[in-house]
Image (cartoon, rainbow over all chains, first blue to last red):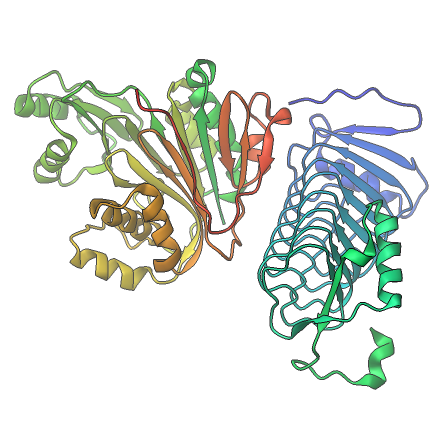
Length: 237
Length: 301
């Protein structure tokens, strides 16, 4: 279904029904080398893959509709807002910047992300934050099974419930869950919520624009029995 | 990787354009499965006492009218064959089991793609877009339909190994994924009297459902049995005379999206497939939960 959006001043409007995805992404990539529009609006994504991925510029991209695989993948510095649902691998391997999904996200949201903030206002399904390496993820709803699998560093905040095997084989990522956890994965344990954690969680919730009281959350992390944790290297995490 | 689509009409308007919508959905899934495509369409119920067969011939010069005459001599009625590319649908004035038995005995060179009273299955190797044109998919009216685009991993690229697989009268299965215990399970099912025509993994799942249901299991119970007895990755869509069902394995690597409006219920491997339907932008959309059976059925009149 075509979405008609009034063209506003200084917002670069791209309609994916008439512009190819390759052209859109090329124009966004060009901003890493030469200045251009700072605000973009993409309409009629119709589930396309890899929309607005690989950016490296301080710009804002609003996407009106549902996107398919790997939207905003490898993002650096840019802000991407998806006014719809996202398919598998949203913000995969994000380096920095902000990605916000108004709806829900499919599996492997924020997979292997190295930095930046991913906010999913609805639910995220299986393997949310799998192998995360520094990204922060805030989910307004619930996450599916095997979330934060082999998560290395960064924070996963879940305002709803978490599915089976949360944090399986986790390294040093921090997991904050407000609702019920169906089950913890290997080497993942509940940990004490100290003041520093409440402060970190409060800041993440505020950055994500989610109203929730850090006191309602529990913290989970690694028991450090499954990998060789050396205290001398703690600063690296 | 493969692509699955399903469409269930909730209005006469969507029934009238079912084939057109199905063709558009299938085309969207081309790059998930460019080597073969297939559909099961539920349409034109056979009159009481009659049944409908979809037959496939590898011979492009197949004399379908001669086959129609032979069936008409055997069972009475007109038994006219309605031909679409390499397939033909014949209406036979007898029960589906007898009609199928007759074809297997007298024309073992033909392949029975489907048997029942409402189902028609068409499948062929080649690009989905070509398939859609070859078989005139856009003409079809019907109540509901499933479709599949295949990227083969477990068996050869042939018409026979394409999906949907028939699992019994008016029943069919399409599959995205791969099963790892299909060889052993095929042997076990053969001992139970289930026949297999290929070495394909999905056919084993189809055979498993047929066997469970012949033992008295409901469709839902048979699908729940898959969770215990099938090892591997799968998103299944199963078509029945009255509707369709969806099941994802508990690991849920294979994607699926469901969406519903007042006019239709649709499933697709991706939103792209559903986005081409009228009113899609306003549809309620969600991802089916792993290991949960979803069923839509028309109320029986």
